[in-house]
Amino acid sequence: MIGISKLYCGAVEAADVLRYGRDSGRLPSHLLQFSADKRPVVVWNITRRCNLRCLHCYSNSQDIPFAGELTTEEGKKVIEDLAQFGAPVILFSGGEPLMRPDLPELAQYAVDKGLRAVISTNGTLITREWAKKLQNIGLSYVGVSLDGTENTHDSFRGRKGAYGAALAGIRHCRDAGIKVGIRFTVSRQNVQDVEAMFDLLVTEEIERLCFYHLVYSGRGSKLRADDLSHAETRQLLDLILRRTKMLFAAGEPREILTVDNHADGPYLYLKLREEDPARAEKVLQLLKMNEGNSSGHGIGCISWDGEVHPDQFWRGISFGNVRKQPFSKIWLDKSNELMAKLREKKKYVGGRCARCRWLDICGGNFRARAEAAGDIWGEDPACYLKEEEIS
Image 1: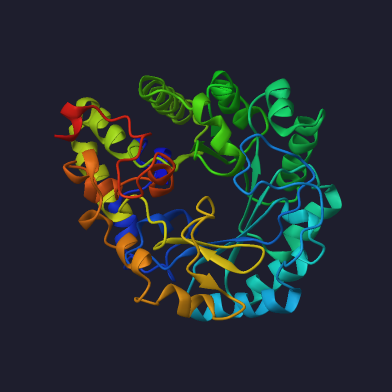
Image 2 (image 1 turned 180 degrees about the vertical axis):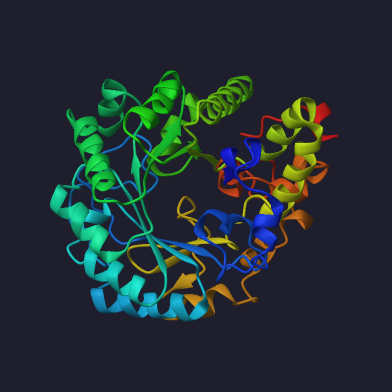
């Protein structure tokens, strides 16, 4: 996760992080990516069921019942363990999490145990009543997925009217006083709508916009041919940087982030080094704190059936199951060879990654994409940095 507004526009300084001691238990949510202990943010896919059928769904969700979901009581045991373990955030995802009737009970239990609870949703089921219920729970954030303007989004989501329903859900959350943001996964099929998402932030008074680089997982693996080229990705980053700066200049600052391609960090730094060398060095300090991709270290995933994965996209790899062993014990089990290697990736990555001067900042980028390209320790095919930039 690269905080464009934090880094490029100076919304965060290194001193802001250091005053908390870089401890994830004390850092506010917007600074967690800079923690030193890297206690994992845990994504819990509480259900695989979903009322939509999205083209890029990493979990291959459908609107049918799936057997084997963790029960409410099993879920509460997981939450108790995460709270005792010191996980700073639990993210309820799916499928569509609002399709699980006990979501409010589980989210309330997480908040009562001291966890920061957030929800990732398609937004279509958030009525005024649901928004009020979520507000009463004390959620930290609701992220709603939009794939572009109305026609683009409805095409991605496989249902006419999905855009209007998602936008209504965003408005209900905003009106209820819940921090709400947009999650936008970029491909050639919707990159033309990026500017419209920036416009939507202002017209709808939305606080946050996260751009997700495509990961070749689940149904998203079928979109690999539609992933942006390296040149197109650079153009995308230039656009995001320009529009973010425009928001700040106009007195309409928003939280803008990019996710799942840590080459964005060095790219941003190199841009800043040309534009504002003094600011660039401050940003470099923050990027070193961020440490780049942290799958299997600073982020983890619990699936609907209790399997523990390095992240929510990497479903072919399991470290264990919370029905057999608590997440905390699974996460600290140093005998798991892959988990141990993921926490020392710099020793094992090959290709361009092995000789890249930004390895400490990028962390070897996304291993799930490297595996999809044929070698778990090979270079991430989505890295768009040029040879002269990494040497």
